[in-house]
Amino acid sequence: MRLVRDLLGDYDANLAVLEDRLGVEAVVNGNAVALRGPDVACATAKSVLEQLYARLAQGEMIGVGEVVGAIRHARAYEPGDDALSHEEVPAAQQVRTRKRLITARTTAQSAYLDSLKRNDLVFATGPAGTGKTYLAVAFAAACLESGKCDRLILSRPAVEAGERLGFLPGDMREKVDPYLRPLYDALYDVLPPERVERGLAAGIIEIAPLAFMRGRTLSHAIVILDEAQNCTPVQIKMFLTRLGDESKMIVTGDPTQVDLPPGKDSGLLEAISILQGIEEIDHIAFTKADVVRRELVGRIVEAYESVPQRGRRP
Image (cartoon, rainbow, N blue to C red; front, top):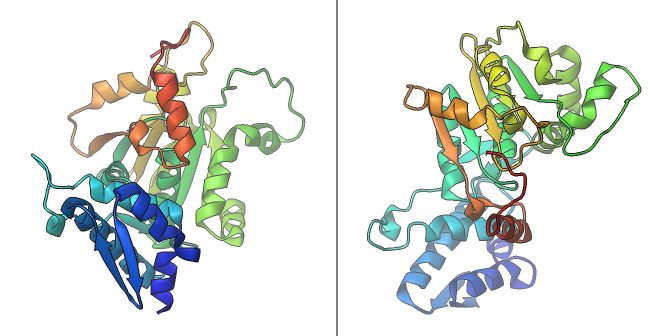
């Protein structure tokens, strides 16, 4: 009974989202939910409820965001010219860390997690809010926790986003931490704080600007390069050639948000083009349809994509 209550949400909020998004009517009678509406919509709603219930049974917390994600995932397989039947809808990919169980909210996110498991170098491109960095960090943290790697290395180019920050006081970590804060945020969200602090102190978890990667060989590690659109072609090549034995690399970025100074070109799309077709290398391209941070973010991305942007560089 508790799982059913969690499935429905406080004051049936989760069920209300299901009804609104799919155009169905859901009537609760004890532990049963009766669905009324178009056949395809009811089939989708049934698939969503079954998958959400299974996730609750695994110990995952379910909120409105998870309901919206499950609906997106199921709707991608609604009957159509090339779609699968509902009986064949695959479950969304998941990654479990000590702190939480994370489930993909779109089919692209599922493809991303699956690609991370199968390939040694994965590029992920797309707009803000699609989970590129968060899922990469969650996957890396899970590998560290399960002993599939010895180290977790997270890196970003120290490039200012259209601002001049000036002189930053303090030691080296204090100087570069403002650039790397999003990586810390993701890490603390998927691992207990004490685990992160112990890992940082022992060097098992390393968060460093891209310049610190030169001359190194990164073995037995999961290595993440975030905001890679702010890397020059030379920097991208330098980073990719750090890959050592039994390591995986994940490179994420949004090619529409380049913050490099005038005269410097981004090397992200060039690297993807050069390396396409090589075994054990994959590219997952997210779109505005995959924005899961908040629906308003998706609408912001869509609005910006609808008009020419002055000064935009590929």
